[in-house]
Length: 282
Image 1 (tube, helix red, strand yellow):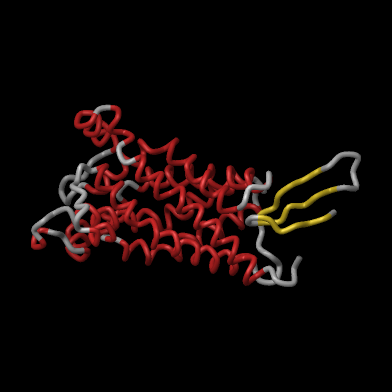
Image 2 (cartoon, rainbow, N blue to C red):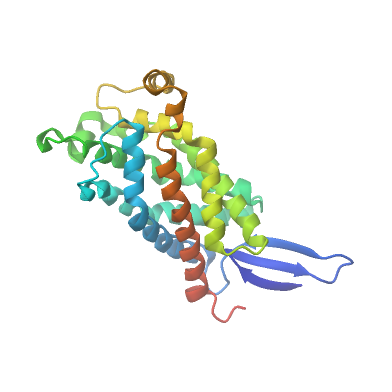
């Protein structure tokens, strides 16, 4: 059996059988514990992604809640980047470590392992940070600085319920995103596509499938204190205000952020693994 490092794992080639057999195994090089390399490389990849792509996420969020997009004030496009940056290390640490854990111990299937990783990151990191990020992004469209709520005011007025708003929708979104993302990326790299190019394509699959859910989640999480909206109320609100096309409002900015973002993520992750953790292992 011959092994070769490729993408985010090893490709094993069997030539001792009457037929050729190739299979892909996601794991870190053996020079360091898998969890350590996943955490460090994932954190580096996520930080690179958010620094480049955060303005597009702000545009997408404001479009979904009908908030103004002040193009002349470009600095406001980075509003909410603080919580995003603080969440990147734990988010990508959980994502890649959970995926690696599932692949090595549970199912050895990139789709189900990606789904497991998506659920883990949604519950532990993504939902609380998304609520804060969305509130800051939409508050930036309020011209009077006195009326803009601060993080402390949000926390005091809504308590722990602030951080659990829209949790079921976040779990479904992240699970479907990462299940399709890792599966498509795994297939494409197996066929010889570079990791960054595979990430660019695989990143589009989840958003195309679940964007209506992302719109509803944004509406639920951006509702001000005292006006909490249920899922059904949010659906009726979006349909009444914007029609069926409103369910895909903000899709293009989301794709414009996620596709290059995933190219950066997988590209940096793969380069980090090769540069720091794979020397002497091939």
